[in-house]
Image (tube, rainbow over all chains, first blue to last red):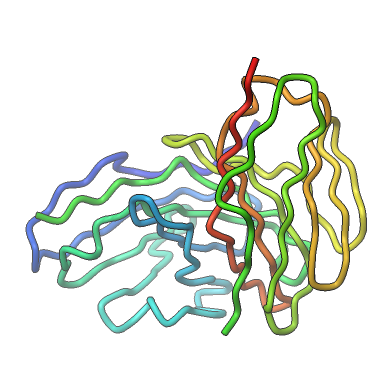
Length: 115
Length: 105
């Protein structure tokens, strides 16, 4: 069964450093998403992406964040200058369609720890 | 502000029917999604829709601003966090805080 994969599973970085979290969506999916979950808190939407453009983003997704699909398979989330409060689990998801009936398939997540 | 509300915990006993309720204040809401999440694993979609639906032991009720997930014949292995999410036509999903289900043998 096809699945979304994410690398690395755990990333440790120093405050102020840039990190890139990588995701490989399911191959025939066209829409891509990032979510985060701070420890002990709920899953929060960050951004949706389609046709090489951001479709929608939340207020969390500020100028420190960017997303990119550098090639035909990877979908990346970059945090330019990490802060302590960026420590969280980051989930990537993908779906075939965007509007309404979009079953999103989630990856296993990358745990980001900012020291 | 778009918000989704669900109880933080629900307790049950094996074999019972469990109901987890969810309501929301999301503008332009289109669909409900119910996810199962075991910590350390990917959230897994259980059931979804803009009408009542069923997938195996999982039933979903639907009203415009609320939904319930019903788990039939609940087992100890069902103990996990269940997320209600509401999606708009623009593809933005708003998640609830999650409901931790505990199941007594």
